[in-house]
Structure formats: C-alpha cells, structure tokens
Length: 127
Image 1 (spheres, rainbow, N blue to C red):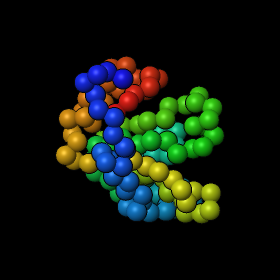
Image 2 (image 1 turned 60 degrees about the vertical axis):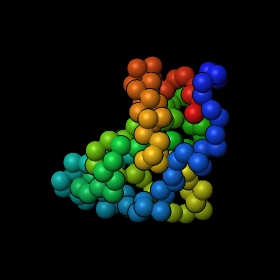
Image 3 (image 1 turned 45 degrees about the horizontal axis):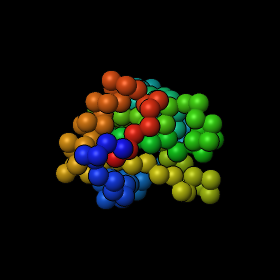
Image 4 (image 1 turned 90 degrees about the vertical axis):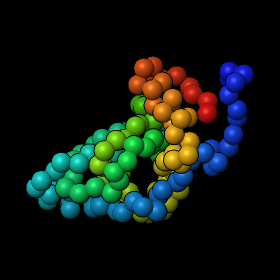
C-alpha cells in the first residue's frame, strides 16, 4: 500500500443501500415491453427493465459467492445513470452486500473509478 494512503474500515467510507432494492420477479421482467434501464446482477448488466431504482454513480461489488471463490468474472462494477439492481429475498440471498460510496468521499471514489477505467478491475485495490 502506498505510504500516503490510509487504511480504514469500509464501513466508514461506504453506505450499504440494500434496503433501497426491491425484488423484481423474472416473469414480471419478461412481460415488460419498454426495456430501457440496465438491470444489474452479480455478473454485471443481465437485462433491461422498464423502471429504475437508482439514479447515481455507484460502485457495485458482486455478491455471487461462487464467483468470489473462482474469481473468473469481474467483481466490481461502476453503475451510472438510471438502473435497477437485482434483488431476490430468500434465505440464499439475505446476506447480500452491495456497497455505495458516501458523498463526502467523492475524491477517493473518483480516483478509484478513474483507476478502474484505466487499468480495469483485474488488479487489487486498497482503499
């Protein structure tokens, strides 16, 4: 870690906004006719939907346990504009963690986003 960086607990620089997510049944998604907003799952954008829940730039951390272990897919996504985030409330997904930055940490977030855009998500990043 560079000497000018400070190690802090993630809970002090990020918000968990899981409570803002609303379940959207697959059949309801299939029946939608005007799909214009990105629908994020654990592997990135997996569909388009008619409505959105979020309208802000956020960092999404993949929640798929199998992917976290295998590390064969991207784990961090930058979502911008209007979008919906997958949410299924059952015993399997109760502990999902999706992280969103606090607004007063914008400089840190902007640098992280710039680094991800330039170098991708393959490298480990310390905040």
